Length: 366
Image 1 (spheres, helix red, strand yellow):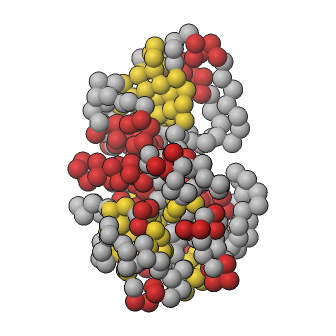
Image 2 (image 1 turned 45 degrees about the vertical axis):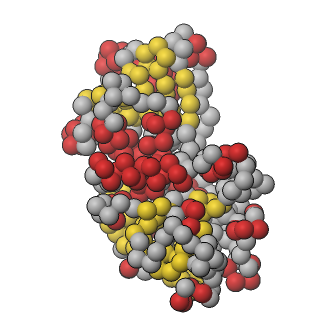
Image 3 (image 1 turned 180 degrees about the horizontal axis):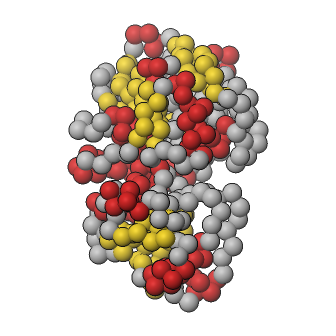
């Protein structure tokens, strides 16, 4: 275990207070447990969730200081004595969870994100490590709080670590740990087929991955976006068609033509208009989280036997399946690499959709 046999100091970028700017900070990572893996973090993706959480936009009362980041790519630096899945030097990643109850029916079947243990899944940042005895930490040493990937290293149970295929660029593969599985999982679970017509709504961090997966799975892919500003980029990403959602005539022509709509939009929008795009038995799956409740007329569902559903990331097993799929098809995220001291500016640019399509922090710059 080397240095990680003892609690380890770790440089990071942290929001010290809710809504505050991210600043250089030092945290302490726990000593390796027998089944733990210590990861030297190389890259950390910037997800919109990081911004929402640190600014209290989803809920108030978060745990601060908060070190965000749940798209983590790095190299195994040390392993506990009982680790069987990984060795020092392996290229690995962790996503949105670092533990769970491990025993409820959802964990047993590999859907840890829906864990129904007493505290649910242990999320990668801003969560308590002491929900379960097997994940517990000494509060006086680490604050018993999970700290995310905007940091030098992380220590995590081997069951929540994934292998990143060696043929993929690590920086560009790192956001797959959230943006990738968030879009891959619903396409698999809700049964996208090669002959299907797929509409990907929104072309951002999630949407551009939805396009890549849809094309790789053999679907006929259309990007649905407001205006035509992203038309050329959608073609570059492999989409077959483009639909301007502000063009009422074009939307009317497209009605009743899609088998599957993947809705990645996190702003308030007209979901009913997306249901109109579906053919009979079509499915609209939401992976973006608008701030307000979504008003839907039941008639839009009933009159076409349509399904409106949601999906939350994916379990560890499915995340590994997604990474392996990306390895076979040479799929990564489109990224812009930044220094740690550029992260506050990057957050503002992400809010303004001024990134194609994911910021990734080079943690060597911490």
